[in-house]
Structure formats: C-alpha cells, structure tokens
Length: 229
Image 1 (tube, rainbow, N blue to C red):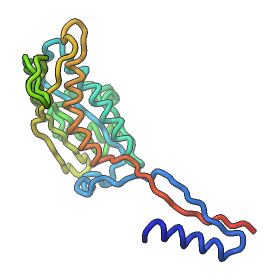
Image 2: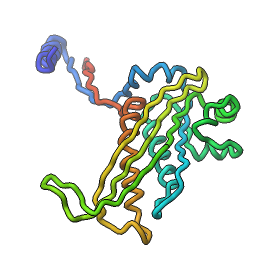
Image 3: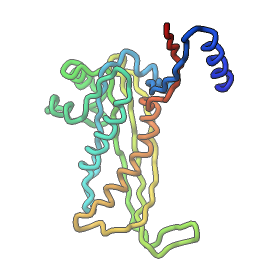
Image 4: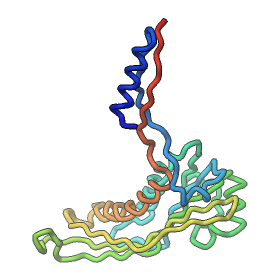
C-alpha cells in the first residue's frame, strides 16, 4: 500500500470516531545480521574482538598502535548487535595474559576453553593482518594524468574470521586490498600519515564485514491511535 493512500485511510478512520486521531511516530529499530552469518551467531550473548599481526614496524609505522586502534573500532561497530555484550581486546589479553593469540593458537581447544571459561565468550571476531607492502611512488595518478606529487602505494592482505566458540563453526573472508594516497606530509619526524593510510586501507573490508554482522538501526514509522473521550 502506498504511503499517500495509507495516510488517507488513517485520516478517514479518524473522522469516523469521536475524538479519535492518529499520531505518526518515527523511531530507529534494530537491524538483523546478514542471513549468511546468522548460523554463526546462534545463542551468542558475548562476543570478543582480537586483531593481530606478525609484521614488524617499519618506516616509523607503529603497527601495534594501528592494530589496537583497529580493534577498538571493530568493538564499537559490533555495538550495534542487539542484546549482545562486546568484550574488547584489552580485557581479553588482560584476563588471558599467558596466551599468545595468532592464526594457529586461536583455534586450539585450550584457548577456546579459556575464552569460554574465563570470559564467558560465545563468539570471537579474529582479524589478522597477514601481509603489508608499502611503496613510495614519485608520481601520483590523477583524472588528468600523472601528477609530480609523490604518493604511497599500500597493499594489504587482511583475513577476518567469525568463530562460534560453542559450535566451533568458522566463517571467513579475506584477500588483498590496495590503497593509494598522495603524500601531503613527511612520513618521518613524528608524522602519522602512514598510520592513517593503513587504517583507511584496513577499514574498508572491515566496514563491509561490520555492516553484515552488525548493521546500523534502520528508521521506521508507526501510526498510533490517540483517542480522546
């Protein structure tokens, strides 16, 4: 039914009853996750986040700082999940100080038991930066050709896993991503442009994942009858 017709019927109904009227109320309702991910989220009340990499810092790029910021961003994004408690990486690593998380250990039975037993986690979002290649380019592409401005060409290989700790089911996505940005500031001497560019490159695939697992609330409209006697 079209919206104009619906409003007309509401108005006519209001005229038929003495003192009756309708009020339109807009609100934001929780959205459901992607059906492809729903089986991995069954009976998930607590979900954790861990972001790791084995890449060493280079060219003043603090990889650990970038991964920590990425982990916080993922935790905030998961906040859209309805009736689900998000456990950040800081709390997980503090509670499980003796465990080193990597692409192998995260699937071990002892680690899984610790995540369930100590943190009461039902699921885990595990993000791994597997590869990073950065190249300084003397020129930058523009819609009108090449510009003499230098730029940085980043290629990353990012893997995202959604692990249901109760059922051991695993959903994964990954692959190489490329990001090119012109260099506007010096990368050395305390500048963090390289960190911002890496975060931007990592954010794009993670935004797609977060939109699937924890889509933002959607605006909806309802009409409520207001009766006056």
